[in-house]
Image 1: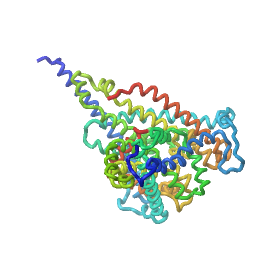
Image 2: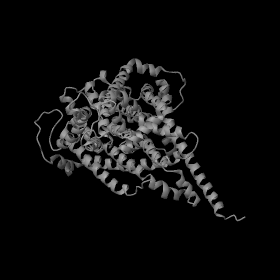
Image 3: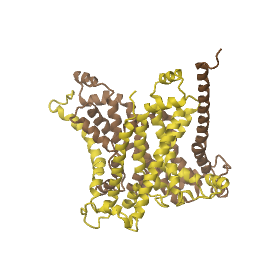
Length: 286
Length: 306
């Protein structure tokens, strides 16, 4: 037996490589535990401490795991339910309007049923690179009399943009022959869209809705500028004002932060694959 | 041709009617405001509208670079470059490393991938608050650690010397997961046979990375660099929720935001200078455009079609 045979060498090399990888993976796991998992657990821990306990010792473990006093404070003193409801109805309305108008437009653009369909596609793509539209948007909404008005905010968030790119991409995968066959059978436009295209669009609607909802839920800039009355505040805008309100009294603030993050975390646990793949798709399109 | 009939005549108009709502919404509320930003940058328009709007040519751009008042804008300009450079470099590097590790088969990797991605969807406001709590200066975990190990005490987001570094940290912490999943998508597209062939040839890990992985994920690299550059140059929400632009943490984008929407617009002047703020947005757009061109030129070359 020759110990320096190529196969022997290869296994040694392979072993070395596997070891290096294993160490790197261990390092990665430690990194993740310290920098990503610990901060979240720490947040939850603080939200369960009494303010006094936090003042005495900010890093200690909570004395009671069922101390939900801070959560009650947030709900009772801060109208959290109203803000929650605001967020949900803004997100919902903007979603419905955006998805429906964008799906229709994406259908005719992807089929080239309109002249210059490529030009329209590029028009929607351009939005990613063009200058920040915030300043003219502000003047536009104000001159429409919709400043500090939920309608104005929803109009502004109704944005086909990136969703259009995703949907055009999706409808291109549905053969045009479908349309022609349906048309030959005497199917009208409305019926085709409603009975044939809509059921086939479920996956792309799910992807777009997730992407779009997360965008609105987390849109701090728009919420700070366009919604100034507390009665119109979405949840994130409300959280932003708590920072000043609670100062260094962290336990109730931590409870509020966790309450804002919770729906997103739950959604993520259930739709993890969908969310990640829709984010990747939006990134690759951009 | 549009195949569907609708009533009898003028079926050719229907597709345009279907397109119209989305087109109108997009043009009125997004495309048109973007273009108007460029027009505004040549005017002296204000938020309060106390004086008639005039075209003032390049005055805003000249004012931006005027040496006498450049100090504050200089800080913003320098910070923008520093922020973009560090964020793009570290975020892309870490994202690629983590993607390679997460692409190996090991238990619980999907849990860690999800955890890494979570901050992307929790949003910058929640993330900033989580880290403000971690950075609590009176005995929070990070400050206790820094004090006991290095004997440093820092005010973190309130420390003029280091606040900007903590903002960069927060930005990278938030978006590395996004960069990582884009790389992962690229890595998963590489057929395993390539690596098996390489193993038969006796190529080690580094060679496999250099000659198989790297060329084949060049497209993901282009996408990541481009998105990170655009994102970093345009970011001002991160500053808004951490320092409000104080403690030397203003960037070009934040400076634009402050000029336009805060009561004090910098250099002791009143805020609401929408024209001047628009010129800052336009300068940023020029940067983004240039970076996009350079990225295309240098990175696209490296891309190999599968």
